[in-house]
Length: 116
Image (cartoon, rainbow, N blue to C red; front, side, top):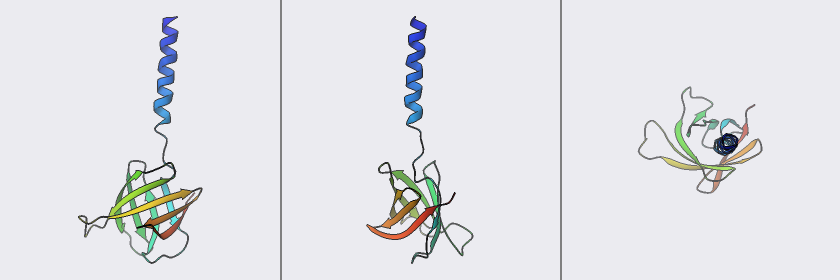
């Protein structure tokens, strides 16, 4: 009987821990819906807290980023270029289904669609 209670307790604890590890809806590959003034074309957000922003013309990422979840559908990103890593810029990504609004200082600078 005690072994069964221990088994059930461990199973519940494991379920709780694993449910906390689900990915944020912002992770994945995003492609710009249309041209934007910053030239951002692809946004790649990894599960490990890193991200990169690519342009249509450059072969290497324009910016490297670190992100953190701010809510169930939003994340903040701190991004910098290789040339100026000491002056990162702050962005926000708000996900609504397969669309995401990418903002800086409260103003949308790009809209992305999730790449399937």
